[in-house]
Length: 140
Image (cartoon, rainbow, N blue to C red; front, top):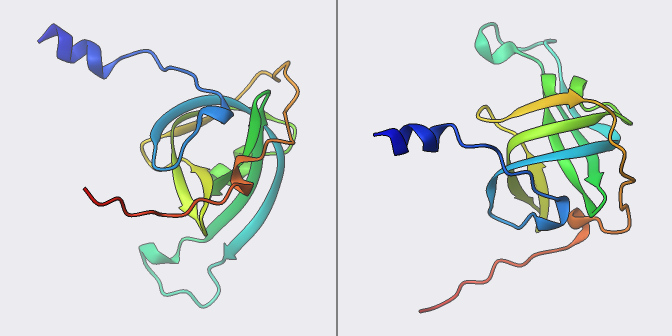
């Protein structure tokens, strides 16, 4: 019983950007926001009343650490946290694939916190979102 309780509250293992791989989840990392570009902004104008009327905002943010950088897909209130030059702790993030390349994202199970400015310089010449992956079916 005690082992199960300990498993639920385990300490986060911080990963570096260059350790991120397709199809993985549960990542916690510290990253600097390099840029943020809004790609979708759907407002209330003409929307049906009800819960679907919430405005949708999606921004692609280039984030990174001293090992590399990756595009982070920020949704709605996450967009406000991902300001260029800020340093964030991203908890329980997952890798989504978009057109064959990796994107980091945080769903309802994860969290983004703005933290103290990081001392590292981002390695911008190792952008993991520029690497194209091809889905290959392996037959047993």
